[in-house]
Image (cartoon, rainbow, N blue to C red; front, side, top):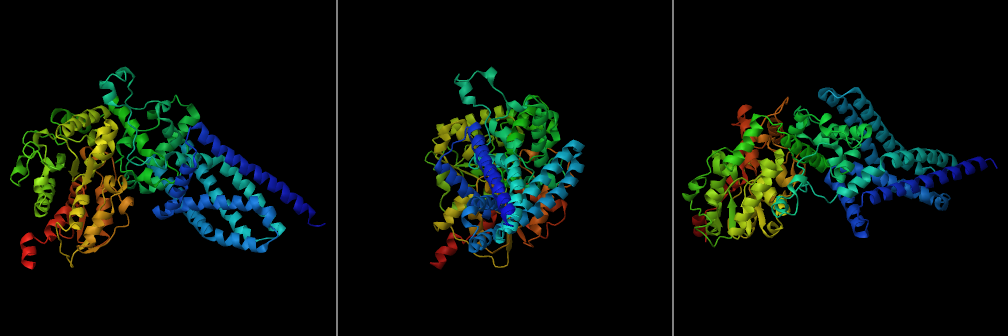
Amino acid sequence: MSNEPLVYALYTLYAINIALIIALIARLYNEVRVNKLPLSINRLIAFLRYEVNGVRRSMVDFMHFSILAGVSLSMLYTILYPWIYQYEIAHYVMFGVATPLIAGLVGAFVWRVQVLARSFRVHGELNVDREFRRKSTTLQGILMAIIVLTASTLALTIMPSLFYTDVKMVITVADYLLIVLFYAKPEVNLYMNFDRGLPNVRMPFNMRDIIDGKVDVSQVRMGVEKLSEFENYEIHSFSTCVEIGACEEACPATAAGRPLSPRVLVRKLALLRNSSGLDAEALKVVGEDELWSCTTCGACTWSCPVGVRHIDIIMDLRRKLVELGRLDQKKSNLLLNLSQYGNSMGMANYGRHEWLRELGVKTVQENQGFEYLLWVGCMGSFDNRAREIIRAFVEVLREAGMLDKIAVLGDEETCCGDPARRLGEEGRFQEMALNNIELFRKYNVKGIITICPHGYNTFKNDYPKVDPWMSNVKVYHHVEFINELIRQGRIRINKANSTVFTIHDPCYLARYNEVVEPQRIIIRGLGELREAKRHGRQTFCCGAGGANYWYDVPEKKRISHIRLEQLMETNANTIVTLCPFCNAMLTDAARVKGVEDKVKVMDIVEVIRDSMVRAEARKAEA
C-alpha cells in the first residue's frame, strides 16, 4: 500500500512523457511538411548514415550525435518502461548502452561552457547590444540544461527502484518539453541541408535564361535586402541556430579579430525576424565589414552540426552591397580589372601565355589533338611566383611524356570568374562563365587541369549550373592528375629521408571538394609527414579566399600569420601548398615574420619535380 502513491505518480508522469514524445514527433513531421521536404525511407536512411558518420567527422559532430542518440535512447527507455521495469537486467543493459553517450554529453556540456565563456569576449569585441547578449546567454543556458537533463535521465536508468524512476520521470518531463520547444527545428534544418553540399551556393538567376528570353530581366533580383527575399532554406537556416558555436570556433575571421562571428551574424537575423517580421531589412543589423570579413572558406557551414548555411546567407547579402554600389576602391578596381582586362591582376591579356612557348607548351590552335586543357589562371599567367609552379608542372608533364596531350588557350584565356562571384558580382561571374564555356565548346574541351582550387571548384561546381554542358567536362586539380601519373608509373619519385613536410590544405580543395588523400599519398612517399592540428577538411584558411586577396578589412592579426604559426608548430621544414594564392599568402607571412630561413613554402608539384627520378637515370638503372 505504501508504494501506491508512487505508482500513481509514476503512471501520471509516464502519460505526460508519452504525450511529449508524441508532440515531438508531431512537431518534427509538421516542420518537414511545412518546408515541403521529401520524406522517404531512402532519404531517412541517408540522413541517419550522415549522422552516424558525423562521429568520425569532428568532435562537435560526435557531441551532437551523443545528444541525438541520448535523447532517442532516453525516449525508447521511457516508452518501454511498463514492460521492462521489473527486470533489473534491462536497466543495467540500458545503462551500459548509454555510458558512451553520457560521456559524449559530458563533453558537450564542457564545450557549451567554453562557448558561453568565449561568447562574452566576442560580444564585447563586436559591441553587440545588451538585448542580444541576454537572449544569447538565455538560449545557451537552455541548451546546456537539455544536455544535463538528458545525461541525468540516462544515468538514472541504472536505478530500478520506484523512487528513482519517479525522479527520472520528472526530469524527462522537463527534458522532453525543452526538446520539443528548441530541438525539433534544428534537427529538421539538418535534414533539409545535410546533402546540399558546401559548393552548392544558391545561384540567384541564370543569365542563359535571360539571354534566351525565358526570364524578364526586370524580374531579376541580384541580392537580398529584406528577410523575405532569402530562400526558404536560408530563412529556416538562420532561424534554427542554437548557438552551438562550432562555426565561431572554426572561423578564421573571428580568430583574426575581424568584425565577424558567423554565430552572431545568423542570430542577429533570427532575432530581427522574431521582432520585426520578414519585411525587416537585413543590412540594418548586419554591418558591411562583417560581410567583407568572410573568406568564404566554408569552415562555419561545414562544422555546424545542425546544418546552418552561413555562406549562402553572407553571399546573398554581399550581392546586395554590390548591387547598391557599396564598394571601396580596391573592390571596385578588382571588378574593373575583370571588365577591362579579362583578368583579376589588371594586366594586358595580350601575350599572357607567350612565356609558355619556351617550355614547349602549345595553344589549342597549334595542338588540335590535345586531351587536356591546361587552365593557367590569372596567378599562373601573371604572377612570377605562380609561374614557377606552372613551370614545375610542365616539367613533370614532360618527364611523364604528356606534354603533347595538353594545350593552353593563350590570349583567349580570361579569368574563371571566381573572384567576381565570391565578391558578390553574380552578373559579371556568369558573363565570364558563359564566355569561357563557349570557348570550351568551340575547342571540344573534354578535360581541364588547373593548379588553382578556386578555378577547380568554379569549373566543377559552378559552371554546370550556368550551363549543364559543363557536366560533361572532367575537371582535375593538378595533384589529382600527378597522383595518377605516379600510380601509372609514368613518373617516379625518390624518398627524401631528411625532409619533414606538413601540408596546408586549401579550403576550396579539401573542404569544398574533399580532395585530401592524393597529396598525402604523394608526400608520404617522399618523406615524413607531420599534420597540423587543423588539416584535411578541417583546414584553416590562408586568408585569401572570398576575394579577400584583393582588399583589406579591419583585423587584429593577419589570418595568414595565424595559419603559418599553426603549420610551424609541426616543426616541419617544408610547407606543402596546393594553391597559388595559399602559396603567396604563406610566403608573405614567412617573410614578414622573418622565418624564411626556417621553413620553405613550396607547391606540391615543385616538391615532386625536385624529387623525380629523371628518364636518363631510369634508363641507366634498366
